[in-house]
Image 1 (tube, rainbow, N blue to C red):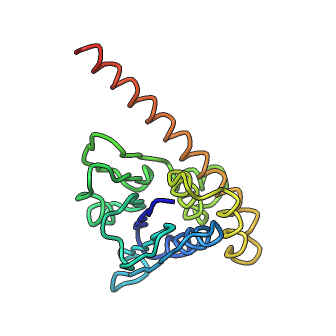
Image 2: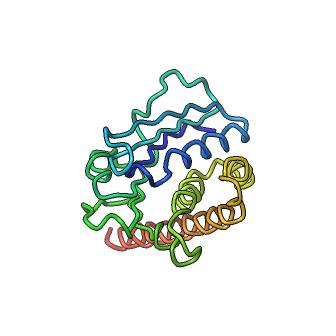
Length: 197
């Protein structure tokens, strides 16, 4: 598995630290080397928070994300702080329910209804972090679903395992559909360019 660097950002209280821990544990179940860390704004709940996960089969020599493969952001504040200065190849996933102003990027920007999906399909926004985890893990393309499921079942707060498994599956499907649409768009654009030549 090539090294992948994930940056999960939002505001304190959205559960992204737990989502990052689940992602890291899924990487361990998949037999990979993993590093996970997090930081909070001074306010903790309601302030900006970020969690980092690095997964790969080689030794991880530096424990912080330097060039993110994927950035997830669940708030406008976090987008402004972490989503603007990314490399062209980095995947940026924003929650369309929470992030309204996004600078257009030529590729690899996905605006997905993460919180809305949790609210409408599960009846509560509480599992939005696990919907987000499903999106991120599906975009990774290198972490098997069964390993993420195992991590979710292991870490879900008591009495919420079933709801969180549903949330994970919803997020996984959301990510797969978005990725497939983007692939179709890239293919069409390449076709258009060939027609122009």
